[in-house]
Length: 161
Image 1 (cartoon, helix red, strand yellow):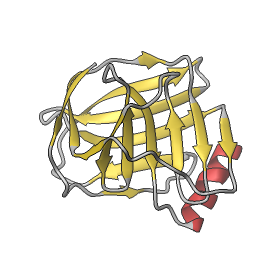
Image 2: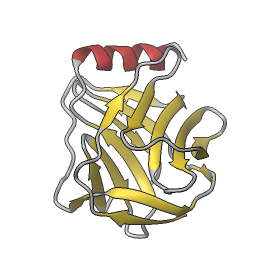
Image 3: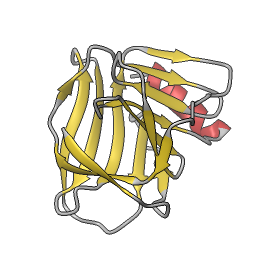
């Protein structure tokens, strides 16, 4: 996977509630055709990322399945020591088969862990945090500032998948 990080603090995201889909994050910006790549584990967990065909920018992140999930009755804490605001522009991408794929649902957010490696840095896009390893691989995706209704919706969709 090859990508660069462009400085940008204006990109907005929104959560779209769609039946049978635990999480769908939509990015603001110009519409364009998209290409897809995914993170999966054993055909039981699947996260799909739509990337603009011309721009290379993330357009949508969709959690379709997550067999392993944990629900916490606490707030999510993200280590913001090493972070930058920006947007990820993909130049090359491919399907990734994960050794670890676990979803953690908190009272105010969701964290999807895609690697055994720890996040060394976060790219912050509005209320979305994308964790990167020292080798610049995506390790986790976190969405913060979710309300009670959104958390309830995600919980129900995870339980009924």
